[in-house]
Structure formats: structure tokens, C-alpha cells
Length: 379
Image (tube, rainbow, N blue to C red; front, side):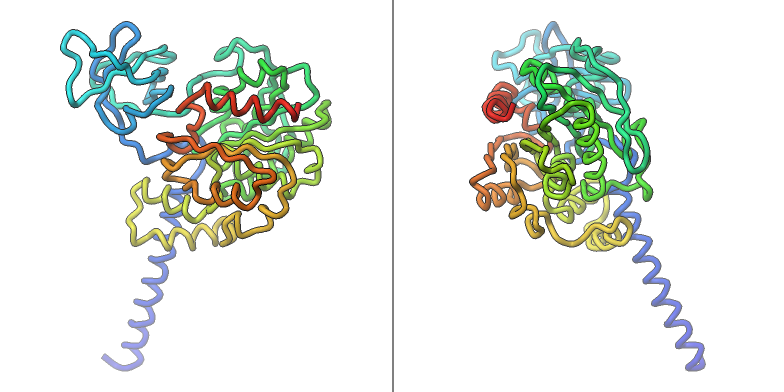
């Protein structure tokens, strides 16, 4: 082969490898961050239903099936609510070392058939506040930079509003877990659907930015609340929604109207969460560094975790932070560090044996009592 030809072949091979690396990185990034929402959070394997009886369900014994608390149980065309593990031995031969029995609170969609393979989810409710909780509400539209965003508004007597914002793998049905409690405190609640959600505008690049762009939709919700009578707002976010709340508390032009933050499983290091999402969705380990670089190029995500930005020092409002060591998508180390750096404002409530975004599910009574104590002086 002539030298010029050999050089051309070598250059083509390098360019081909480079193009392949770019394509692989984009594939991995899209697998982790691709919209639309909701996409089930990966990680937990499916659980097989073995049997049901009055108020009982027998499931394959596994770490997810043994978690304390109350969860949704969902699959294609199926949604139910399961309670804690039942301590007493079941009858009729349904107990074995390979199964676990939980309380079965209700079946909200479809039917639970033996052999069905389902996932636990933090979302207990289906439908709007009236259908799920019997609460009167209004369907409203919040003007945002990409277009109008649907929201549920549940009225209350106070002039401090709570704006709820879901996170990864969820929709505005997730905050319904606590909206009944907030309504009992006479707090108006605005439950927001933001870019990428059903009925909301699509993100321009079709990707989730883990709060770094989406926070502007939350900022629009703050403006809406103030326009319609809120003197103060409390931002209650889960997962990337909690990250949106942190960004808004520091960057919003109306940050002086924010009276407090409630953060559940906040995503504070987007790189760690992106790698965890990509890995759980089957991206080979060798492609994970490419996924991070591709995500930076596609979304504009900067390289600094939230703790390395101005957020910790610029935070000015009381913050209640729920997180736990069992979170594999947004490790709780940064939450511990934030609480340690700002003990004047941040109260951390560790929650054991709870997956990402499910701190309420693990112990609803304890969660709501901590929330009540936090909100009372802010109302």
C-alpha cells in the first residue's frame, strides 16, 4: 500500500472510531435522560405475584418486596397499593422461604393475577385530586417559557402556598401522596406538570436536564402563585424536582417570596445520577464516561455538582431534607454534606430502607410529623 493510501485508511479508521464513540455516547445519554416522562426508574427487578386473598398479597421474596411502608404495585394495565409486610404466618400453604406476604390495601386498575410481574413504585394514586383523594381542585395552566403547563390547584385558606414538583420516573400524581396532608393544614397546593410531562411542552432537545433547565418552569409556577394571591410559597420537590427547588431558591427573581424548601431525595451530582440511570438501563460500563460527555454536549449540563456551585452559600431559607443511604440514583452523601455546611438552615431526616424518591412511603406518619413541625412556623 502506498504511504498516501495507508495514511488515508488510518485517518478514516480514526474518524470512524471517533464517530462511533460519539454515537455510542449519545445512545448512552439518551438511554439515561430521554424523555418523555414518565419513564420507570430502573434498578428494582420485577416482583412476581403468587396469590391474593382478602387484604393480602403474596409476592416473590426480595429486597424490594421486604421494604417497610406502603407502595404502589404497577405494571401494564395494573395498579394496586400494598401495605407493610404481614408478620403472622399466612394460611393455606401460601408461605414459603421464597415468598413474602404484604397487606393489600386496594386495586385501582386492572386485576392482580398469579404470575404477573410488577414493580413497586412510590406513586400510590392514579387520577386527579378529586378522583384519588376526593379533593375539590381546579385544572389550571401555568405560562412557561416553552408554553402553557398544566397544574392542579387545590385551594386552602392560607396565603402561603405549597408548590409540589415531582422528579425522575414520576408525574404530578406522585405528590398526591402528601397533598391530602397539606390540605388538612389548610395550605393551598399547586401541583405542577413541567416540560416533558404529559400535556406539557416538550424539552427542545427531548432530554431531561435533571433540574438545571427545568427549574425555570418552577420559577414560572412561583410567578403564577404570587399573581393569584400567594404571599409566600413553600417548594416541595422530589428527586430532580428537589434540585429544581434548590435552583429556584437561589436564582429566581422572586426568591424573596420563597419561605422554605422541602427536598426529598435531591439530585445534587448529575454525573453520578446519569451514570446510575444509564447503567440501570443496560448501558455497558465502558460507555458510561462517554454518556457523561455526550450529556454535557447535548444538554449544556455543567460539570459541577450543586455542592460545588453557589447554592450552599446562597441558600437563605429554612430547608427540610429527607434522604437515605439506600438511594442508589442520588446518593445521600451530598445531602449530608449540605446539612453539615448549613446547619443554620438545613434539617436532615435520614430514612432507612427507602429507594429513591420514596422517603414518605417508608414511614408516612414519621414523614408527615416532620413536615408538620417544619411547616407550622412558616404558614
